[in-house]
Image (cartoon, rainbow, N blue to C red; front, side, top):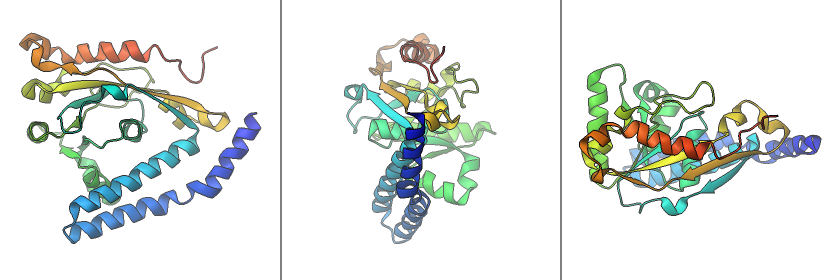
Length: 253
């Protein structure tokens, strides 16, 4: 069975995966072109569509089988909310977009905006630059995020602050929810599990079940000021409890 799956994956790579890189380059090229022609909205739609397709093919090639639950908990697109997923690997970003079927803004390190191709991708995803090396950079990022929420835009924040080094859920920092504290917007906890196994090669020998679940939103407007300061532990508890319900991969013997 493992041999069959390996052969199938090689066949998929030869037929489908090779166009990924020219597709990605074409998407960024078209984004730059339409932006220069002042068709930025069209550029964003086009580049996001290509990005979505590239993510799908990459996940298929790596051997991921995605199970999505809780889409009924997603607020209306016109409502500004904060999505709070756990952070296991670089796959979390495409997995979130794939599961949510929408493209809320994310925060990106200022250093990433200096990388030519990545810079274009971050702009097409409407990311917010955060300079974590200075207090001013953090304040500006929070101010911009508050504006987005108040205008009906949404935001994805990884409350752990960085990717987990162990594959386990890390501590959710309350500081990550300063925007929710100031705006009173709802928070949607998001569970993502087993994507780390894809990058560690587990998918080479079979299908890796990837679990994505959108939990019911937390209404921060009804919380006391003290409770708002403890949003990190509150959201972490909900994500952790749901995360532990899903089997890990590779399965523990």
